[in-house]
Image 1 (cartoon, one colour):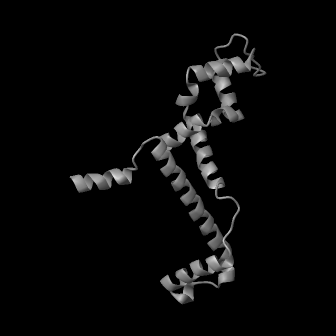
Image 2: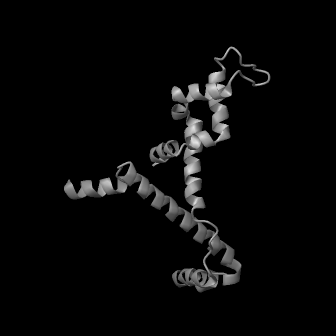
Image 3: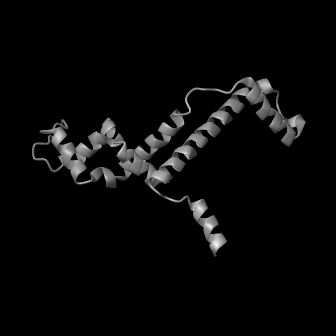
Length: 157
């Protein structure tokens, strides 16, 4: 999953939009630039250094860059949920399910757990958005889900 997210981030060129990533790539190449000033961090041509870094694939092999791009993809999925919130009726239904599955004496009143229910709902929506994005990306990159591979192996084996 991480590799798929990383490949998609590269396809979307997120590494070119992230100033921290660009700075890191420039610094990695700048160490070999004779015009690089260690004290000020100024170099002859940062655009040229960035081009060199990209040409030799530094952005593909740097673990911190990979991690940052993957995090950006996850955040993009989470942000796709937006600020929409369920109405209290949906929260009340969720609350009622909790009551039905637990001892009534241990469940606080709805008003006291409303924010917790909202937080849980947001997390569920974010997880669903990420799962949907991953499903779409698996199709694009033609990768099977490990769960699907295991279930088909057990049927065939």
